Each structure stands twice: as structure tokens, then as C-alpha cells.
Image: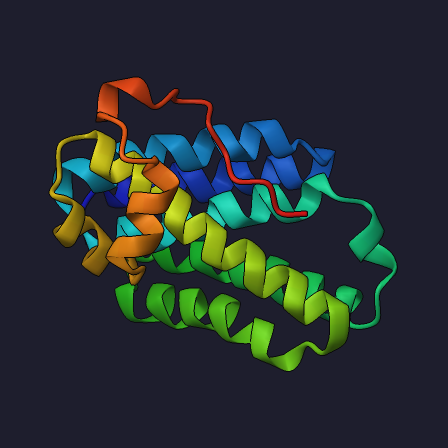
Length: 175
């Protein structure tokens, strides 16, 4: 894992921003991680960028909080973030990765509209972060592979524009 201290800071600040419901702060934290991921191609940094960005998009919306399964999903997410902070403080990369995976797998425990919505958010978050990494000069093919998106999805999102033509603030609507 590269940039452990940065990832630890990102998760500490994400926890704090969550307590305030500050989606913009969380999105900014994700962008900071994307810059590191672009330089290092580190899978841990990439996973953090996607997870934190998806979280920012999830908490932006109020309507999903009334859907069945939300409370359990949120509790799982928060517990995993707490465990990630503890693991990083102890230099425990194994538990860090276990808790990253818990966040990813928590989606599979959902059902109905909430599951569909959150799956969509994570997919679009991956495409968004792929676009950001691509903007930093990494080849489209390598970026797509790093983020687990198709070349078509990435090219479609980037719109065939040059990296310098894509505004840094561009995001994908999640519904």
C-alpha cells in the first residue's frame, strides 16, 4: 500500500464529514485520493477513491434513507470505515483490505430499489474515477483495467475529448 498516511487522513476526514453530512467535503477527499492513484497506480488508492466518491454520492440523496435496508447498510459502512482507520493506525493492511471488501460486499446484502441505486452509484463512481485517472495521462486501456470498467464506458464518459477538455468538476448523474 502506497501513501498509507494519506489514506488514513482521507478516512479520518471522511468520518468527520459524514457526521456533518458534508458530501462536498467527501467528494473533495476522493479527488485527492484520485490524484495519488493516478501517480502510483496503487489498487488500494484506487479502491479508496471509488469508495469515498460513491459514499459522497450516496449521502447527497435523502430519499434512499427511507428505503428498506438503508440503516443496516449505513451501519455496515460506518463500522467498516472505523475498522479501516484502526487497521491503518496499526499498519494492518490485511484488515484494511478486509474492510474495503466488506463495504463492497455490503451492496449484495441489499434488495430492491436501494440495491439497484447503490450498485449504480458504485459503477458510475468507478467510471468517474477512471476518467479522472485517464486525465492524468494514464492510457485509456490501462485505466479501464485498473478500475474494472470497459473501454466503451470510459470512452463514452470521457466523450472522446482530450483530457484537458474535461472539466475537473464533471460528475455523472446518479438519478
